[in-house]
Image 1: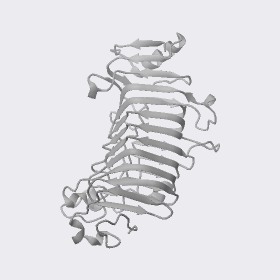
Image 2: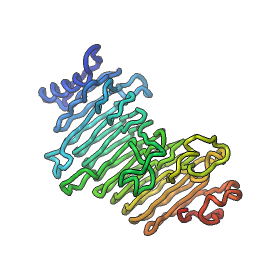
Image 3: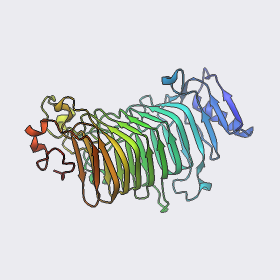
Length: 382
């Protein structure tokens, strides 16, 4: 591929406008790649992305040394890729965009870091995102795209005591707010099959704060999402790490989900101070995976939580919940801690591995719907 290279960060001006011009100049000269140098590129306006195939390459993120950071000093989406939200063919979509070895940093603003709307065959390779209380990647009507070796850290936000106002929140039973990664299949009005065949390989979703959903897949047209060798970790999460609603085809291959203190509220846990969110939240919060009216949820998930301090790790450390729809061959391999698997009817969950139930259960059996004995893997909802 022909490319242009810009290794020096401009000392003045809007770097978003500068990168947009680099892309236009490259395409004018017949190139379809632009390389950005290491350093901090601060965008005041969004980077303008072409509809034609193009590749933007950085030098990695600072965890690897001095990387390429795309950040902002205004409340704008750093990189929106905007094709048609109702597009029914690639001719009306952003085609084959590629991002590689880049970090996106939200810097306290609220607009998404990346917006993939109406995109065909995107590929994000070794992309790292950071930024508290914000959506990192918003995806709508995006087809046949791959996210490989990406890391999403610290995004999303919701009020744990919020009134359940939206139709989605009424269905799932808790406030959702802003997820860290949002695959939205609700926007198309043309009946288009939106956001299908998304492949996630070797990705990490971690440290989403204040009860946020790390990954929300939403909408009746969502089809075929594949997760391979991915890891979710939420040490204080009181929302599911993955929430899937009305999806057709969600497959996990050798994935890991881990969380300590999953869904502690609304239970009055000994050793947890009064006035904390764990004492004040009044809705139920599934911990690892929550599927609502999904069909063909399948694969293998390994995870759980450490036994640790019983007051902080009970009672829903590892909680997979399915209700409505169908699930085929979903296996949860428990590595430790307390485990609760719920089948809401018409689904079906298997578990394997070393399931351990600490002595805590003997004195707190009232937390469970029925007397859960060692070796029992499934109980009904309270």
